Image 1: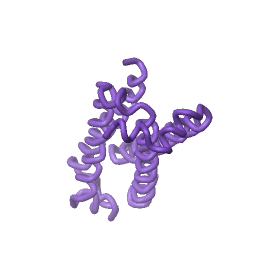
Image 2: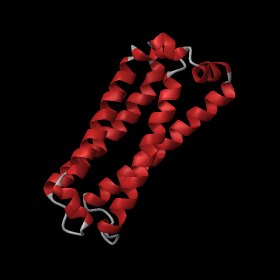
Image 3: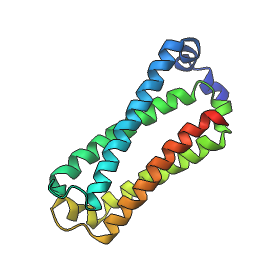
Image 4: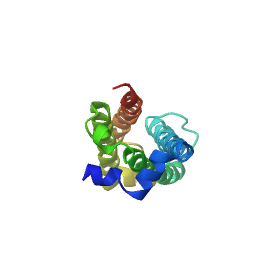
Amino acid sequence: MLEWLGGLPFALLLQRSSTLYLLVNAAHIAAIGLLVGTIVSLDLRMLGAFRAVPLAVLAPFLSRMAASGLALAILTGFLLFSVRPLEYATNPALQAKLCLVALGVLNALWLHAGRHWRDVLSGQQVRAVARLHALASLLLWPGAIVAGRWIGFL
């Protein structure tokens, strides 16, 4: 299946065009910046930073922006993976990155599915459980970035 993926037209195009590969890579980096920038801002606010900004106003916007960054990062990451899928599939750094991203997504989904997120959106005090989700997020997403940078060194 991985060989098949590497032979698909978009993968071949990326393999043959250094300019297109560069643009997809740049889009991946921008998507990660959007994802992590908005998540870190939201997490810090949930942990008590810049209290002058109402969390009930900030949280829905930042959450949607983070989801948009995640969607773009997944799309561009898949395109980059398709260039050398056999090599990347066995790369321990990529495996670690994917695990950290999955944990980050699960952490966000768990928070959003619970009553603590509804409390945040209604302007109530941020409960300890929601703060733990924010703290976990602050560890998981930068960890995924470090693992992602590590890919090229293994």
